[in-house]
Length: 238
Image (tube, rainbow, N blue to C red; front, side, top):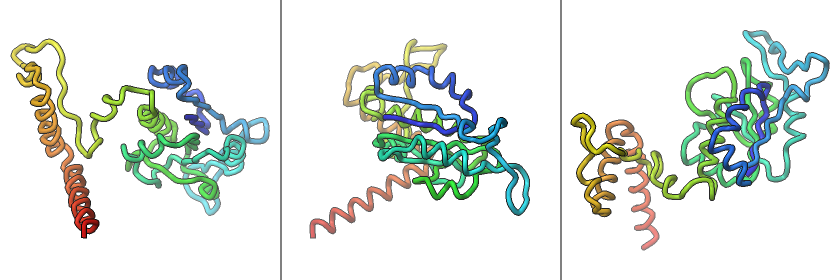
């Protein structure tokens, strides 16, 4: 997989590129990350990428010319282009699975008060990582890159990916490690039993309990899916 990030803050990615998951998969040839400085496509000695909005208003707006020239230079037939914006579709684990199947992702990181709306006519979709505002799209680009990279075949053990929060609309079950007894706080006996079926059952039950407590909306989503599946099966059998 190749990921190209268009940004006016390329230095923000220096440490990110050296994190274990990203650097390891880059060395293995599973991932190619390209950081593209949008300022390189801005004319003049000042490489100006922003301007005041037509019609007035607070703040500055990213100009379309530098962004679209950078995009045209990096885009290929395999590219899927995403603007990171609070106006976009809410990002979740399902979206991470979808994007992990792409050959080449291009992320455009917004900044200032927003971007010239003409930029949106040249992209495939807008994505938001949540209902809050950041100064730019650089952090969302890192978050999505890491979440997607974890799902690429060969990146991690499949067992590690399958038994995580949000897979199957459940939060992950509680985990423990040594010591078995820490100042009176003991690891559940079933985890020390060696009975794999009992452990599997306990983990599922605990995942349901934790989800019900912390994210009941996920259980409701799971229930609706199950009802829909039953209806589809009945229709197909008729």
